[in-house]
Amino acid sequence: MQLSQALKVLAAVAIAFGLHVQGGAAYEPRTVGALALRLAFWSVVAGLAWWAVRPKGL
Image 1 (cartoon, rainbow, N blue to C red):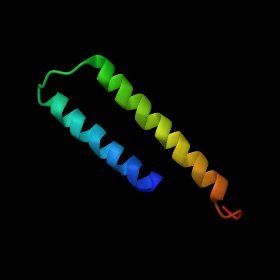
Image 2 (cartoon, rainbow, N blue to C red):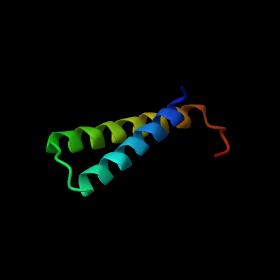
Image 3 (cartoon, helix red, strand yellow):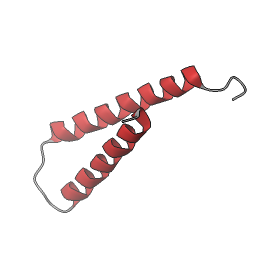
């Protein structure tokens, strides 16, 4: 699985979790923080990976 695909899956899980919580389901606040941190970390990794292999004209 490519990093971009994994990032899309993680974003979809975050959205689904947000909808689940918005619907009134019980949740642990640490879970929200961990999910946000994970999404931010992998977004930075994906950005750095793209930056490292980007065409030099961009």
